[in-house]
Length: 247
Length: 197
Image (tube, rainbow over the protein chains, first blue to last red):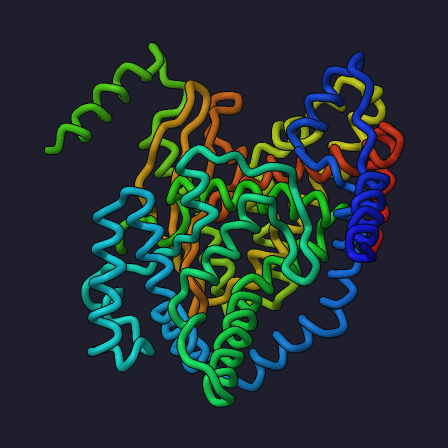
């Protein structure tokens, strides 16, 4: 029963770290508390502080090294390839969201870029046919099905999230066929490489924004909480970059 | 024309107020002009980084409704603040906003922008969308919210990839004040400290 006791202990620590809502008499403060939807704020802030520390000593230096060592055209090619590899997940979610046209774009891009784009390294579909990349994930699909986001969460290492997006993230991994392909040393190595490069690439894309937030915000935690929500809402409504008509 | 397109136009007509406070054509030409001016300065290789930032700041002071944005960002705490605090806050906020934006824009060498679709959103303001491109970087959407301030078009919000500057900052400032015991002076102190750096 050691596991259960340990779990209980963790749960208690979590509950003890929950924020106290303002009194009902302070209506503005209460409205704001509800809008922030962050009942576990003290707990989240603690995880955030650990993440920020890891970021300074580990993640940011790795990102900067990646930027210095790998020239921009190679990074672009890698990003294109990673996006191409992600096709099954995007396609599935396009379909689950009832977006046949976007699903068609995803499939067409995959065929064109895998062949003419040399295995996905060159985004021919975008620059020649004007069909730009768009992303989708299962967290967005759940949102279009009407599932609420739940309370704000800061995950260790991964950062801003919520129960809906955390579940979505797990489903994305499970619905990526490559997760289940083969076994053995070489396959594990390649799959580890893909995950590592994927994280590095995702991080590189937002590094300037994060630097800006850390440099100018008086409370980076609050800024990122608001920014994460707004960014996700834009992505759910397909108002993010990939949703725009081609140039 | 699709049925959805026609429906959108009908809806758009129904939503039009009797006198549009800010018509989209005016908003778009305002952003075209201000944007060209900004890009001209940012891409002027003969200017030092310092001179570039200063000239960008001058354009922003003219084009942005600094007081309006400042009041919006302080939100419900504007009423709580004393007149002296309101004044001091606005002074510090305007300086901080201009400095932060000028610093950011100043780094955008080689930047190009294109006007996207322009949509009128509310009775009071128009949203002008642009696509910003920098060499070797992914393009991003930057939307400008334009309102009529004293008869002149002015920028009241910047929305980068769906994230509104003024909404994000309002959340940030509310957090600073709440954690500072509900005192606007806590925010003023934090702003002052940041500007002193």
